[in-house]
Amino acid sequence: MATPRERFLEALKFLQELQEKRIVGVHTDHMPNRKYREILSKNGFIREVVKGWYIITSPEEKDGETTAWYSSYWDFVAIFLERKYGDNWCLSADQSLLLHAANQSVPQQLLVRSPQGNNNPTPLPHNTSLFNIRGELPSADQLIVTPNGIRMYNLQSALIYSSASTYTRNAIDARTVLSMIRDASELLPVLLENGHTTLAGRLAGAFRNIDRNKIANQIIDTFKQADYDIREEDPFERKLDLKLSTRERSPYANRIRLM
Image (cartoon, rainbow, N blue to C red):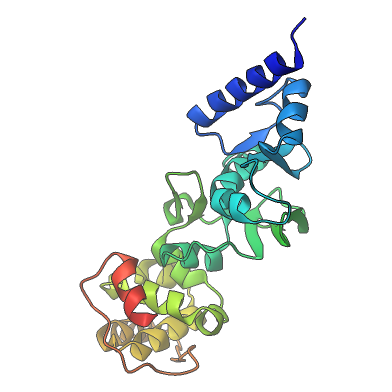
Protein backbone atom coordinates (compact mmCIF):
# COMPACT_ATOMS: atom_id res chain seq x y z
CA MET A 1 0.00 0.00 0.00
CA ALA A 2 1.39 3.40 -1.02
CA THR A 3 2.42 5.81 1.74
CA PRO A 4 1.03 9.38 1.85
CA ARG A 5 4.37 10.66 0.52
CA GLU A 6 4.29 8.22 -2.39
CA ARG A 7 0.70 9.18 -3.27
CA PHE A 8 1.70 12.83 -3.17
CA LEU A 9 4.58 12.20 -5.58
CA GLU A 10 2.29 10.19 -7.87
CA ALA A 11 -0.22 13.05 -7.93
CA LEU A 12 2.50 15.58 -8.76
CA LYS A 13 3.79 13.37 -11.57
CA PHE A 14 0.28 13.12 -12.99
CA LEU A 15 -0.09 16.91 -12.80
CA GLN A 16 3.19 17.31 -14.66
CA GLU A 17 1.87 15.08 -17.44
CA LEU A 18 -1.19 17.32 -17.77
CA GLN A 19 1.03 20.40 -17.98
CA GLU A 20 3.20 18.78 -20.64
CA LYS A 21 0.01 18.28 -22.68
CA ARG A 22 -0.71 22.02 -22.19
CA ILE A 23 -4.02 21.29 -20.50
CA VAL A 24 -5.11 24.45 -18.67
CA GLY A 25 -8.74 23.73 -17.90
CA VAL A 26 -8.70 20.43 -16.02
CA HIS A 27 -11.96 18.48 -16.12
CA THR A 28 -12.53 15.56 -13.78
CA ASP A 29 -12.30 13.32 -16.85
CA HIS A 30 -8.68 14.46 -17.23
CA MET A 31 -8.05 13.45 -13.63
CA PRO A 32 -10.33 10.49 -12.84
CA ASN A 33 -8.34 9.51 -9.75
CA ARG A 34 -10.28 11.22 -6.97
CA LYS A 35 -7.40 10.85 -4.50
CA TYR A 36 -5.08 12.78 -6.85
CA ARG A 37 -7.64 15.58 -7.07
CA GLU A 38 -7.97 15.75 -3.30
CA ILE A 39 -4.20 15.80 -2.75
CA LEU A 40 -3.52 18.45 -5.40
CA SER A 41 -6.44 20.64 -4.32
CA LYS A 42 -5.54 20.43 -0.63
CA ASN A 43 -1.94 21.45 -1.36
CA GLY A 44 -2.86 24.32 -3.68
CA PHE A 45 -1.74 22.83 -6.99
CA ILE A 46 -5.23 22.98 -8.53
CA ARG A 47 -8.27 25.13 -7.73
CA GLU A 48 -11.91 24.47 -8.59
CA VAL A 49 -13.43 26.99 -11.02
CA VAL A 50 -16.90 25.50 -11.49
CA LYS A 51 -18.21 22.09 -10.51
CA GLY A 52 -16.05 19.45 -12.16
CA TRP A 53 -13.53 21.97 -13.52
CA TYR A 54 -10.15 23.09 -12.16
CA ILE A 55 -7.22 25.28 -13.16
CA ILE A 56 -3.60 24.63 -12.27
CA THR A 57 -2.32 27.04 -9.62
CA SER A 58 0.78 27.74 -7.57
CA PRO A 59 0.77 26.59 -3.93
CA GLU A 60 2.23 30.00 -3.07
CA GLU A 61 -0.83 31.82 -4.38
CA LYS A 62 -3.02 32.90 -1.49
CA ASP A 63 -6.81 32.80 -1.41
CA GLY A 64 -8.23 35.81 -3.20
CA GLU A 65 -5.26 36.29 -5.53
CA THR A 66 -6.21 36.50 -9.21
CA THR A 67 -2.93 35.64 -10.96
CA ALA A 68 -3.70 32.01 -11.87
CA TRP A 69 -7.23 32.79 -13.01
CA TYR A 70 -6.40 35.80 -15.16
CA SER A 71 -3.38 34.14 -16.75
CA SER A 72 -5.32 31.00 -17.67
CA TYR A 73 -8.68 32.65 -18.47
CA TRP A 74 -8.78 32.46 -22.28
CA ASP A 75 -7.33 28.96 -22.46
CA PHE A 76 -9.80 27.77 -19.84
CA VAL A 77 -12.77 29.38 -21.60
CA ALA A 78 -11.82 27.75 -24.90
CA ILE A 79 -11.66 24.19 -23.52
CA PHE A 80 -14.70 24.72 -21.26
CA LEU A 81 -16.90 25.90 -24.15
CA GLU A 82 -15.56 23.28 -26.55
CA ARG A 83 -16.58 20.55 -24.12
CA LYS A 84 -19.98 22.17 -23.53
CA TYR A 85 -20.93 23.03 -27.12
CA GLY A 86 -18.40 21.30 -29.40
CA ASP A 87 -17.83 23.67 -32.32
CA ASN A 88 -21.34 25.10 -32.04
CA TRP A 89 -20.46 28.40 -30.34
CA CYS A 90 -18.62 31.68 -30.78
CA LEU A 91 -17.93 34.87 -28.86
CA SER A 92 -20.19 37.86 -29.40
CA ALA A 93 -19.28 40.35 -32.11
CA ASP A 94 -18.42 42.99 -29.49
CA GLN A 95 -16.01 40.69 -27.65
CA SER A 96 -14.54 39.49 -30.95
CA LEU A 97 -13.78 43.09 -31.90
CA LEU A 98 -11.87 43.63 -28.65
CA LEU A 99 -9.70 40.58 -29.29
CA HIS A 100 -9.01 41.72 -32.87
CA ALA A 101 -7.86 45.01 -31.35
CA ALA A 102 -5.34 43.08 -29.20
CA ASN A 103 -7.37 43.75 -26.05
CA GLN A 104 -7.14 40.48 -24.13
CA SER A 105 -8.27 41.84 -20.79
CA VAL A 106 -10.60 39.51 -18.91
CA PRO A 107 -14.21 40.74 -19.22
CA GLN A 108 -16.46 40.80 -16.20
CA GLN A 109 -19.05 38.94 -18.27
CA LEU A 110 -18.15 37.10 -21.46
CA LEU A 111 -20.99 36.90 -23.99
CA VAL A 112 -21.10 33.62 -25.91
CA ARG A 113 -23.51 32.72 -28.71
CA SER A 114 -24.77 29.19 -29.30
CA PRO A 115 -27.99 27.60 -30.60
CA GLN A 116 -27.74 25.49 -27.42
CA GLY A 117 -27.39 28.49 -25.10
CA ASN A 118 -29.79 28.86 -22.19
CA ASN A 119 -29.70 32.66 -21.72
CA ASN A 120 -28.29 32.19 -18.23
CA PRO A 121 -24.99 33.18 -16.64
CA THR A 122 -22.34 30.73 -15.47
CA PRO A 123 -20.54 32.19 -12.43
CA LEU A 124 -16.73 32.09 -12.58
CA PRO A 125 -14.03 33.13 -10.09
CA HIS A 126 -13.36 36.71 -9.01
CA ASN A 127 -16.76 38.11 -10.01
CA THR A 128 -16.47 37.04 -13.65
CA SER A 129 -19.02 35.01 -15.57
CA LEU A 130 -20.08 33.57 -18.91
CA PHE A 131 -23.46 34.45 -20.38
CA ASN A 132 -24.74 31.84 -22.82
CA ILE A 133 -26.91 33.60 -25.41
CA ARG A 134 -29.21 31.32 -27.37
CA GLY A 135 -28.84 32.42 -30.96
CA GLU A 136 -27.75 31.40 -34.42
CA LEU A 137 -24.09 31.51 -35.33
CA PRO A 138 -22.71 33.63 -38.15
CA SER A 139 -21.94 31.82 -41.39
CA ALA A 140 -18.77 29.73 -41.54
CA ASP A 141 -16.96 32.30 -43.69
CA GLN A 142 -17.51 34.92 -40.97
CA LEU A 143 -15.93 32.81 -38.23
CA ILE A 144 -12.33 32.15 -37.26
CA VAL A 145 -10.73 29.94 -34.62
CA THR A 146 -7.66 31.23 -32.79
CA PRO A 147 -4.65 28.98 -32.08
CA ASN A 148 -5.85 28.44 -28.49
CA GLY A 149 -9.35 27.42 -29.65
CA ILE A 150 -11.37 30.61 -29.22
CA ARG A 151 -14.16 30.75 -31.82
CA MET A 152 -15.10 34.29 -32.82
CA TYR A 153 -16.24 36.61 -35.61
CA ASN A 154 -13.60 37.45 -38.18
CA LEU A 155 -12.25 41.00 -38.30
CA GLN A 156 -14.73 42.37 -40.85
CA SER A 157 -17.83 40.71 -39.36
CA ALA A 158 -16.89 41.74 -35.82
CA LEU A 159 -16.72 45.34 -37.01
CA ILE A 160 -20.01 45.11 -38.91
CA TYR A 161 -22.04 43.45 -36.17
CA SER A 162 -20.64 45.14 -33.06
CA SER A 163 -23.17 47.23 -31.20
CA ALA A 164 -23.22 51.04 -31.25
CA SER A 165 -22.19 51.11 -27.58
CA THR A 166 -18.80 49.57 -28.48
CA TYR A 167 -17.79 52.88 -30.07
CA THR A 168 -18.36 54.74 -26.82
CA ARG A 169 -17.39 52.15 -24.20
CA ASN A 170 -14.38 50.81 -26.14
CA ALA A 171 -13.44 53.66 -28.45
CA ILE A 172 -9.73 52.74 -28.59
CA ASP A 173 -10.54 49.18 -29.64
CA ALA A 174 -13.10 50.30 -32.23
CA ARG A 175 -10.70 52.82 -33.78
CA THR A 176 -7.92 50.23 -33.78
CA VAL A 177 -10.03 47.73 -35.76
CA LEU A 178 -11.31 50.43 -38.14
CA SER A 179 -7.70 51.34 -38.91
CA MET A 180 -7.02 47.73 -39.97
CA ILE A 181 -9.52 47.92 -42.87
CA ARG A 182 -7.83 49.00 -46.08
CA ASP A 183 -10.73 49.15 -48.49
CA ALA A 184 -14.53 49.27 -48.37
CA SER A 185 -14.66 46.10 -50.47
CA GLU A 186 -13.75 44.14 -47.33
CA LEU A 187 -17.09 45.12 -45.79
CA LEU A 188 -19.51 45.82 -48.63
CA PRO A 189 -20.37 42.21 -49.63
CA VAL A 190 -21.78 41.40 -46.19
CA LEU A 191 -23.43 44.81 -45.78
CA LEU A 192 -25.12 44.71 -49.19
CA GLU A 193 -26.14 41.07 -49.13
CA ASN A 194 -28.10 41.61 -45.94
CA GLY A 195 -29.27 45.18 -46.64
CA HIS A 196 -27.63 46.52 -43.49
CA THR A 197 -28.30 50.20 -44.11
CA THR A 198 -28.15 51.23 -40.45
CA LEU A 199 -24.90 49.35 -39.85
CA ALA A 200 -23.43 50.72 -43.07
CA GLY A 201 -24.33 54.29 -42.09
CA ARG A 202 -22.72 53.79 -38.70
CA LEU A 203 -19.55 52.39 -40.26
CA ALA A 204 -19.35 55.24 -42.77
CA GLY A 205 -19.55 57.74 -39.91
CA ALA A 206 -16.96 55.81 -37.92
CA PHE A 207 -14.51 55.74 -40.82
CA ARG A 208 -14.98 59.46 -41.42
CA ASN A 209 -14.26 60.05 -37.74
CA ILE A 210 -10.77 58.56 -38.18
CA ASP A 211 -10.24 60.44 -41.48
CA ARG A 212 -10.78 57.45 -43.73
CA ASN A 213 -13.04 59.52 -45.98
CA LYS A 214 -12.43 57.38 -49.05
CA ILE A 215 -13.84 54.27 -47.34
CA ALA A 216 -16.74 56.25 -45.89
CA ASN A 217 -17.62 57.65 -49.32
CA GLN A 218 -17.37 54.24 -50.96
CA ILE A 219 -19.86 52.77 -48.48
CA ILE A 220 -22.35 55.62 -48.90
CA ASP A 221 -22.06 55.80 -52.68
CA THR A 222 -22.37 52.03 -53.16
CA PHE A 223 -25.53 51.84 -51.07
CA LYS A 224 -27.08 54.78 -52.90
CA GLN A 225 -26.27 53.18 -56.24
CA ALA A 226 -28.08 50.06 -55.00
CA ASP A 227 -31.14 52.26 -54.24
CA TYR A 228 -30.81 52.00 -50.46
CA ASP A 229 -31.77 54.90 -48.21
CA ILE A 230 -28.61 55.25 -46.11
CA ARG A 231 -27.87 57.85 -43.47
CA GLU A 232 -24.37 58.40 -42.18
CA GLU A 233 -24.00 58.58 -38.40
CA ASP A 234 -20.83 59.02 -36.35
CA PRO A 235 -21.05 56.58 -33.39
CA PHE A 236 -18.10 58.08 -31.51
CA GLU A 237 -18.55 60.69 -28.81
CA ARG A 238 -15.72 62.85 -30.14
CA LYS A 239 -13.13 63.13 -32.87
CA LEU A 240 -9.43 62.71 -32.16
CA ASP A 241 -6.73 64.89 -33.65
CA LEU A 242 -4.57 61.88 -34.47
CA LYS A 243 -3.42 60.40 -37.76
CA LEU A 244 -3.58 56.62 -37.82
CA SER A 245 -1.35 54.64 -40.15
CA THR A 246 -3.08 53.35 -43.26
CA ARG A 247 -0.50 50.62 -43.78
CA GLU A 248 -0.76 48.75 -40.47
CA ARG A 249 -2.54 45.41 -40.58
CA SER A 250 -1.41 44.54 -37.07
CA PRO A 251 -3.44 46.19 -34.30
CA TYR A 252 -0.50 46.99 -32.05
CA ALA A 253 1.04 50.10 -33.64
CA ASN A 254 -2.19 52.06 -33.97
CA ARG A 255 -3.43 50.84 -30.61
CA ILE A 256 -0.30 52.25 -28.96
CA ARG A 257 -0.81 55.58 -30.74
CA LEU A 258 -4.41 55.73 -29.55
CA MET A 259 -3.49 54.87 -25.97
